[in-house]
Amino acid sequence: MDEDIKTFNDHQKAKYLDKIKHYCAYRDRCHKEVIDKLFKMNVPSDMADEIISELVTEGFLNEERFVLAYVRGKFRMNKWGKNKIKLELKQKEISNYLIKLGMKEIDDNDYYKTLSNLLIAKRNTFKAKNQYDLFNKLYGYAYRKGYESELIKNVIEDIV
Image (cartoon, rainbow, N blue to C red; front, side, top):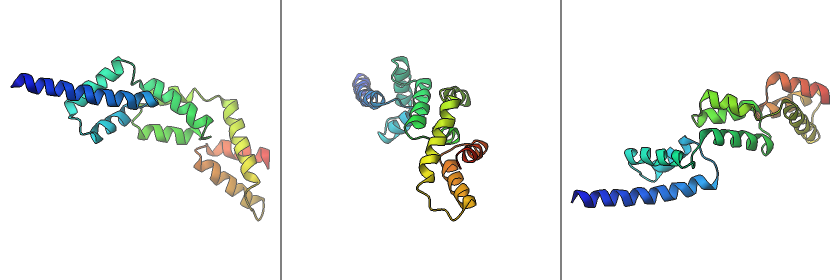
């Protein structure tokens, strides 16, 4: 009887492991995303720990690789600033060490140029009563995108 339960558990684990491998292969995932997915699949916590261990061992789950890809993608594709990227990574329970490592993926010159291009493009879409109003609208837009206050001010002064 105990052997039947063990066989059943091994079969269930293999099934869950296969599904979660596909989930991780689709794009890089962080530990929290995988844990949440396993929880939604109603995987018992002891089995989930074993699955996560196997995913790490087999290279399906790598926090550092996830962070580097996440930072590059959010900056290049979504044009997010560092503050927003950091906040999102913290919500995914990424360590401060890995967040700092990920931020090194963003070149300072590219960062400035990206913000500048964003604000130049946005400047033409805003209907502003005066320079002060334009400044506030541009500042608010860039701040919501996650850029730093001082950098925003400098870029706006350069382009207005």
